Amino acid sequence: MLHFLQEEDIWTRLSGEKRPIFLYGMGNGAEKILHEFSRCGIRAAGLFASDEFVRGHSFRGYPVRRYADICAEYPDFLVVLAFATHDPAVLARIAAMHQEHEVLAPDVPVAGEGIFNRAFMAAHEAEFAAVYDLLADDISRYIYAQVLNFKISGKVDYLFHSATPKEEVYTSLLRVGPAEYFVDLGAYDGDTIRELLAHTDGQYAEITAIEPDPKNFKKLTRFAQTLEKPIDCRNIGVHSQAGVLRFSPCAGRNSRVLAGPGKYLEVPVDTVDHMMAGKQVSLLKMDVEGCEMEALCGAEETIRSQRPKLYVCAYHRNEDLFALPLKIHELCNDYQIYLRHPPYLPAWETNFYAVCPPRSSIG
Figure (cartoon, rainbow, N blue to C red):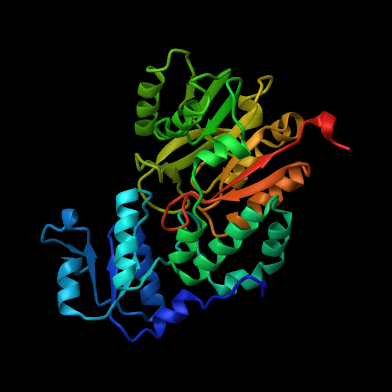
Protein backbone atom coordinates (compact mmCIF):
# COMPACT_ATOMS: atom_id res chain seq x y z
CA MET A 1 0.00 0.00 0.00
CA LEU A 2 1.13 3.58 -0.62
CA HIS A 3 3.66 4.75 1.94
CA PHE A 4 1.61 7.80 2.94
CA LEU A 5 -1.65 5.91 3.46
CA GLN A 6 -1.91 5.44 7.22
CA GLU A 7 -5.59 5.09 7.96
CA GLU A 8 -8.17 2.43 8.74
CA ASP A 9 -11.15 2.20 6.42
CA ILE A 10 -14.00 4.32 7.84
CA TRP A 11 -16.65 1.70 7.03
CA THR A 12 -14.72 -0.98 8.92
CA ARG A 13 -14.30 1.38 11.84
CA LEU A 14 -17.97 2.38 11.94
CA SER A 15 -18.99 -1.28 11.78
CA GLY A 16 -17.18 -1.82 15.08
CA GLU A 17 -18.07 1.50 16.72
CA LYS A 18 -19.50 1.12 20.24
CA ARG A 19 -20.65 4.71 20.70
CA PRO A 20 -24.01 5.87 19.33
CA ILE A 21 -23.66 7.20 15.77
CA PHE A 22 -25.66 10.29 14.77
CA LEU A 23 -25.87 11.68 11.26
CA TYR A 24 -25.57 15.44 10.92
CA GLY A 25 -27.59 16.61 7.91
CA MET A 26 -30.22 15.44 5.46
CA GLY A 27 -30.58 15.13 1.70
CA ASN A 28 -28.80 13.15 -0.99
CA GLY A 29 -25.59 12.73 1.00
CA ALA A 30 -27.46 11.29 3.96
CA GLU A 31 -29.37 8.95 1.63
CA LYS A 32 -26.11 7.56 0.23
CA ILE A 33 -24.53 7.18 3.67
CA LEU A 34 -27.57 5.40 5.11
CA HIS A 35 -27.55 3.07 2.10
CA GLU A 36 -23.93 2.18 2.85
CA PHE A 37 -24.77 1.82 6.56
CA SER A 38 -27.39 -0.75 5.61
CA ARG A 39 -24.96 -2.62 3.36
CA CYS A 40 -22.26 -2.71 6.06
CA GLY A 41 -24.56 -3.47 8.98
CA ILE A 42 -23.95 -0.10 10.65
CA ARG A 43 -26.72 1.25 12.87
CA ALA A 44 -27.47 4.96 13.13
CA ALA A 45 -28.84 6.02 16.52
CA GLY A 46 -30.47 9.09 15.04
CA LEU A 47 -30.10 12.24 13.02
CA PHE A 48 -29.81 15.95 13.75
CA ALA A 49 -29.68 19.16 11.74
CA SER A 50 -28.59 22.72 12.32
CA ASP A 51 -31.12 24.44 14.54
CA GLU A 52 -32.54 26.56 11.72
CA PHE A 53 -33.55 23.37 9.84
CA VAL A 54 -35.28 21.59 12.71
CA ARG A 55 -39.06 21.88 12.26
CA GLY A 56 -40.44 18.79 13.98
CA HIS A 57 -40.16 16.66 10.84
CA SER A 58 -38.41 13.35 10.07
CA PHE A 59 -35.98 11.99 7.51
CA ARG A 60 -35.89 8.34 6.45
CA GLY A 61 -37.83 7.45 9.60
CA TYR A 62 -35.53 9.38 11.96
CA PRO A 63 -36.94 12.41 13.79
CA VAL A 64 -34.79 15.45 12.94
CA ARG A 65 -33.32 16.62 16.23
CA ARG A 66 -31.11 19.41 17.57
CA TYR A 67 -27.46 18.85 18.44
CA ALA A 68 -27.96 20.33 21.92
CA ASP A 69 -30.75 17.86 22.67
CA ILE A 70 -28.57 14.90 21.69
CA CYS A 71 -25.69 16.25 23.81
CA ALA A 72 -28.05 16.46 26.78
CA GLU A 73 -29.17 12.85 26.32
CA TYR A 74 -25.88 11.16 25.34
CA PRO A 75 -22.60 11.95 27.13
CA ASP A 76 -20.53 10.42 24.31
CA PHE A 77 -21.39 9.82 20.66
CA LEU A 78 -19.92 9.96 17.16
CA VAL A 79 -21.06 12.46 14.52
CA VAL A 80 -21.18 11.49 10.84
CA LEU A 81 -21.33 14.53 8.56
CA ALA A 82 -23.86 13.98 5.77
CA PHE A 83 -23.72 17.21 3.77
CA ALA A 84 -21.18 19.42 2.00
CA THR A 85 -20.29 22.97 2.94
CA HIS A 86 -17.76 25.71 2.30
CA ASP A 87 -19.57 28.32 4.39
CA PRO A 88 -17.03 29.70 6.90
CA ALA A 89 -19.59 29.90 9.72
CA VAL A 90 -20.73 26.30 9.19
CA LEU A 91 -17.12 25.06 8.94
CA ALA A 92 -16.37 26.82 12.22
CA ARG A 93 -19.44 25.19 13.78
CA ILE A 94 -18.26 21.75 12.63
CA ALA A 95 -14.74 22.39 13.93
CA ALA A 96 -16.15 23.37 17.34
CA MET A 97 -18.43 20.31 17.34
CA HIS A 98 -15.39 18.15 16.52
CA GLN A 99 -13.76 19.35 19.75
CA GLU A 100 -16.74 18.06 21.73
CA HIS A 101 -17.65 14.90 19.81
CA GLU A 102 -15.59 13.33 17.05
CA VAL A 103 -16.84 14.19 13.56
CA LEU A 104 -16.25 11.87 10.61
CA ALA A 105 -17.27 12.60 7.01
CA PRO A 106 -17.69 9.46 4.89
CA ASP A 107 -16.72 9.92 1.26
CA VAL A 108 -19.57 9.04 -1.08
CA PRO A 109 -19.21 9.85 -4.79
CA VAL A 110 -21.24 12.62 -6.40
CA ALA A 111 -21.42 10.51 -9.59
CA GLY A 112 -20.79 6.88 -10.39
CA GLU A 113 -21.00 3.80 -8.23
CA GLY A 114 -19.03 2.21 -5.43
CA ILE A 115 -17.27 3.55 -2.36
CA PHE A 116 -13.77 4.96 -1.98
CA ASN A 117 -12.27 2.46 0.47
CA ARG A 118 -9.03 0.57 1.04
CA ALA A 119 -10.02 -2.10 -1.47
CA PHE A 120 -10.49 0.60 -4.13
CA MET A 121 -7.13 2.12 -3.19
CA ALA A 122 -5.40 -1.25 -3.39
CA ALA A 123 -6.91 -1.99 -6.81
CA HIS A 124 -5.51 1.31 -8.17
CA GLU A 125 -2.33 1.65 -6.13
CA ALA A 126 -0.09 1.94 -9.21
CA GLU A 127 -2.18 4.78 -10.65
CA PHE A 128 -2.27 6.70 -7.36
CA ALA A 129 1.50 6.30 -6.98
CA ALA A 130 2.06 7.51 -10.55
CA VAL A 131 0.02 10.66 -9.94
CA TYR A 132 1.78 11.35 -6.64
CA ASP A 133 5.14 11.27 -8.45
CA LEU A 134 3.76 13.34 -11.32
CA LEU A 135 2.57 16.28 -9.21
CA ALA A 136 4.54 19.47 -9.70
CA ASP A 137 5.23 20.65 -6.14
CA ASP A 138 5.50 19.52 -2.54
CA ILE A 139 2.26 21.26 -1.60
CA SER A 140 0.37 19.23 -4.21
CA ARG A 141 1.89 15.97 -2.98
CA TYR A 142 1.07 16.87 0.63
CA ILE A 143 -2.55 17.70 -0.25
CA TYR A 144 -2.83 14.54 -2.36
CA ALA A 145 -1.76 12.40 0.61
CA GLN A 146 -4.06 14.30 2.99
CA VAL A 147 -7.08 13.98 0.69
CA LEU A 148 -6.52 10.25 0.14
CA ASN A 149 -6.16 9.65 3.88
CA PHE A 150 -9.36 11.61 4.41
CA LYS A 151 -11.24 9.62 1.80
CA ILE A 152 -10.21 6.38 3.49
CA SER A 153 -10.75 7.45 7.10
CA GLY A 154 -13.36 10.22 6.96
CA LYS A 155 -11.25 12.19 9.49
CA VAL A 156 -12.03 15.86 8.94
CA ASP A 157 -8.68 17.03 10.33
CA TYR A 158 -7.02 15.93 7.09
CA LEU A 159 -9.06 18.48 5.15
CA PHE A 160 -8.79 21.20 7.78
CA HIS A 161 -5.00 20.84 7.63
CA SER A 162 -4.71 20.80 3.84
CA ALA A 163 -6.98 23.72 2.92
CA THR A 164 -5.40 26.52 0.91
CA PRO A 165 -6.86 29.91 -0.10
CA LYS A 166 -8.68 29.86 -3.44
CA GLU A 167 -6.93 33.10 -4.39
CA GLU A 168 -3.63 31.23 -4.74
CA VAL A 169 -5.04 29.30 -7.69
CA TYR A 170 -5.58 32.44 -9.74
CA THR A 171 -2.53 34.41 -8.64
CA SER A 172 0.22 31.79 -8.28
CA LEU A 173 -0.81 28.74 -10.31
CA LEU A 174 -2.98 29.88 -13.23
CA ARG A 175 -1.60 33.44 -13.10
CA VAL A 176 -4.62 34.84 -14.85
CA GLY A 177 -4.48 38.16 -16.66
CA PRO A 178 -6.67 40.60 -18.57
CA ALA A 179 -6.15 38.85 -21.93
CA GLU A 180 -7.67 35.45 -21.08
CA TYR A 181 -9.68 33.46 -23.60
CA PHE A 182 -11.66 31.60 -20.96
CA VAL A 183 -13.90 28.61 -21.67
CA ASP A 184 -16.03 27.71 -18.65
CA LEU A 185 -17.52 24.21 -18.88
CA GLY A 186 -20.21 23.92 -16.21
CA ALA A 187 -20.55 27.66 -15.73
CA TYR A 188 -23.47 27.32 -13.27
CA ASP A 189 -24.54 30.91 -12.49
CA GLY A 190 -21.22 32.51 -13.44
CA ASP A 191 -19.52 31.91 -10.08
CA THR A 192 -16.12 30.97 -11.55
CA ILE A 193 -16.30 33.85 -14.02
CA ARG A 194 -16.79 36.17 -11.04
CA GLU A 195 -13.71 34.68 -9.38
CA LEU A 196 -11.68 35.11 -12.55
CA LEU A 197 -12.72 38.73 -13.09
CA ALA A 198 -11.91 39.57 -9.49
CA HIS A 199 -8.29 38.76 -10.34
CA THR A 200 -8.14 40.47 -13.74
CA ASP A 201 -9.67 43.84 -12.81
CA GLY A 202 -12.77 42.75 -14.71
CA GLN A 203 -10.85 42.41 -17.97
CA TYR A 204 -10.81 39.50 -20.45
CA ALA A 205 -10.33 38.84 -24.14
CA GLU A 206 -13.27 36.45 -24.58
CA ILE A 207 -15.39 34.22 -22.37
CA THR A 208 -17.43 31.23 -23.53
CA ALA A 209 -19.73 29.89 -20.81
CA ILE A 210 -21.29 26.43 -21.22
CA GLU A 211 -24.19 25.44 -18.93
CA PRO A 212 -26.70 22.68 -19.81
CA ASP A 213 -29.19 23.10 -16.96
CA PRO A 214 -32.00 25.45 -18.13
CA LYS A 215 -32.58 27.09 -14.74
CA ASN A 216 -28.88 27.56 -14.11
CA PHE A 217 -28.56 28.94 -17.64
CA LYS A 218 -31.15 31.62 -16.87
CA LYS A 219 -29.08 32.69 -13.85
CA LEU A 220 -25.96 32.67 -16.01
CA THR A 221 -27.51 34.88 -18.69
CA ARG A 222 -28.80 37.32 -16.07
CA PHE A 223 -25.27 37.60 -14.69
CA ALA A 224 -23.84 38.00 -18.21
CA GLN A 225 -26.12 40.97 -18.79
CA THR A 226 -24.43 42.80 -15.89
CA LEU A 227 -21.05 42.70 -17.63
CA GLU A 228 -19.92 45.63 -19.74
CA LYS A 229 -18.43 43.34 -22.38
CA PRO A 230 -20.61 40.51 -23.80
CA ILE A 231 -19.79 36.86 -23.24
CA ASP A 232 -20.87 33.82 -25.27
CA CYS A 233 -23.38 31.81 -23.19
CA ARG A 234 -24.47 28.42 -24.55
CA ASN A 235 -27.21 26.18 -23.15
CA ILE A 236 -25.52 22.89 -24.04
CA GLY A 237 -23.50 20.12 -22.40
CA VAL A 238 -20.01 18.85 -23.18
CA HIS A 239 -18.95 15.28 -23.84
CA SER A 240 -16.55 13.15 -25.87
CA GLN A 241 -18.74 13.38 -28.97
CA ALA A 242 -21.75 15.31 -30.22
CA GLY A 243 -25.19 13.91 -29.47
CA VAL A 244 -28.07 14.04 -27.01
CA LEU A 245 -27.90 12.80 -23.43
CA ARG A 246 -30.38 12.43 -20.59
CA PHE A 247 -29.72 15.10 -18.04
CA SER A 248 -30.84 15.39 -14.40
CA PRO A 249 -32.13 18.96 -13.97
CA CYS A 250 -31.33 19.73 -10.34
CA ALA A 251 -31.16 23.50 -10.90
CA GLY A 252 -28.03 23.62 -8.80
CA ARG A 253 -24.39 22.63 -8.64
CA ASN A 254 -25.17 18.92 -8.91
CA SER A 255 -27.05 18.93 -12.22
CA ARG A 256 -25.50 16.09 -14.19
CA VAL A 257 -25.83 13.47 -16.90
CA LEU A 258 -28.23 10.75 -15.75
CA ALA A 259 -27.04 7.16 -15.99
CA GLY A 260 -30.10 5.43 -14.55
CA PRO A 261 -33.82 5.98 -14.01
CA GLY A 262 -35.23 9.27 -12.84
CA LYS A 263 -36.59 12.56 -14.08
CA TYR A 264 -34.59 13.89 -16.98
CA LEU A 265 -34.33 16.30 -19.85
CA GLU A 266 -32.78 15.41 -23.18
CA VAL A 267 -29.92 17.85 -23.66
CA PRO A 268 -27.68 18.35 -26.70
CA VAL A 269 -23.98 17.87 -26.06
CA ASP A 270 -20.93 18.67 -28.12
CA THR A 271 -17.16 18.51 -27.88
CA VAL A 272 -14.86 21.37 -26.98
CA ASP A 273 -12.87 20.69 -30.15
CA HIS A 274 -15.95 21.25 -32.31
CA MET A 275 -17.39 24.20 -30.38
CA MET A 276 -14.07 26.04 -30.16
CA ALA A 277 -12.69 25.14 -33.61
CA GLY A 278 -10.77 28.14 -34.91
CA LYS A 279 -11.05 30.03 -31.61
CA GLN A 280 -8.36 30.78 -29.06
CA VAL A 281 -8.48 29.11 -25.66
CA SER A 282 -6.03 30.21 -22.95
CA LEU A 283 -7.89 28.86 -19.89
CA LEU A 284 -10.20 25.84 -19.88
CA LYS A 285 -12.24 24.95 -16.79
CA MET A 286 -14.12 21.64 -16.39
CA ASP A 287 -16.71 21.27 -13.63
CA VAL A 288 -19.18 19.00 -15.39
CA GLU A 289 -20.45 16.80 -12.56
CA GLY A 290 -18.73 13.53 -13.37
CA CYS A 291 -18.17 13.98 -17.13
CA GLU A 292 -14.71 15.49 -16.80
CA MET A 293 -13.04 12.53 -18.51
CA GLU A 294 -15.46 12.74 -21.44
CA ALA A 295 -14.87 16.50 -21.62
CA LEU A 296 -11.10 15.96 -21.75
CA CYS A 297 -11.51 13.37 -24.50
CA GLY A 298 -13.61 15.85 -26.47
CA ALA A 299 -10.95 18.55 -26.03
CA GLU A 300 -7.89 16.57 -27.10
CA GLU A 301 -7.08 18.64 -30.19
CA THR A 302 -7.62 21.93 -28.38
CA ILE A 303 -5.37 20.85 -25.51
CA ARG A 304 -2.61 19.45 -27.72
CA SER A 305 -2.53 22.39 -30.12
CA GLN A 306 -3.18 25.34 -27.79
CA ARG A 307 -1.95 23.98 -24.44
CA PRO A 308 -4.40 26.11 -22.40
CA LYS A 309 -4.20 26.37 -18.65
CA LEU A 310 -6.50 23.71 -17.21
CA TYR A 311 -8.79 23.84 -14.17
CA VAL A 312 -10.30 20.36 -13.73
CA CYS A 313 -12.52 19.27 -10.86
CA ALA A 314 -11.43 15.98 -9.32
CA TYR A 315 -14.06 15.01 -6.77
CA HIS A 316 -17.14 13.78 -8.62
CA ARG A 317 -16.08 10.18 -9.28
CA ASN A 318 -13.92 7.84 -7.22
CA GLU A 319 -11.43 7.47 -10.07
CA ASP A 320 -11.04 11.19 -10.75
CA LEU A 321 -8.00 11.58 -8.49
CA PHE A 322 -5.92 9.31 -10.72
CA ALA A 323 -7.69 9.04 -14.09
CA LEU A 324 -7.91 12.77 -14.84
CA PRO A 325 -4.27 13.79 -14.19
CA LEU A 326 -3.02 10.72 -16.05
CA LYS A 327 -5.20 11.69 -19.02
CA ILE A 328 -3.89 15.28 -18.92
CA HIS A 329 -0.33 13.96 -18.88
CA GLU A 330 -1.12 11.65 -21.79
CA LEU A 331 -2.49 14.54 -23.85
CA CYS A 332 0.49 16.80 -23.18
CA ASN A 333 3.37 15.60 -21.03
CA ASP A 334 4.72 19.15 -20.63
CA TYR A 335 1.90 20.07 -18.26
CA GLN A 336 2.91 20.89 -14.71
CA ILE A 337 0.03 19.49 -12.66
CA TYR A 338 -0.94 20.89 -9.27
CA LEU A 339 -3.60 19.89 -6.73
CA ARG A 340 -5.32 22.26 -4.34
CA HIS A 341 -8.20 21.96 -1.87
CA PRO A 342 -9.95 25.09 -0.51
CA PRO A 343 -11.78 25.16 2.84
CA TYR A 344 -14.55 22.63 2.13
CA LEU A 345 -16.07 19.54 3.75
CA PRO A 346 -16.03 16.84 2.48
CA ALA A 347 -13.34 16.79 -0.26
CA TRP A 348 -15.40 18.77 -2.77
CA GLU A 349 -13.63 21.43 -4.82
CA THR A 350 -10.45 19.35 -4.78
CA ASN A 351 -9.18 20.34 -8.20
CA PHE A 352 -6.26 19.80 -10.54
CA TYR A 353 -4.64 22.81 -12.19
CA ALA A 354 -2.31 22.26 -15.11
CA VAL A 355 0.01 24.77 -16.76
CA CYS A 356 2.36 24.33 -19.71
CA PRO A 357 5.56 26.36 -19.99
CA PRO A 358 5.84 28.51 -23.12
CA ARG A 359 6.95 26.48 -26.13
CA SER A 360 10.06 28.59 -26.54
CA SER A 361 11.25 27.60 -23.04
CA ILE A 362 11.05 23.84 -23.65
CA GLY A 363 14.26 21.93 -24.22
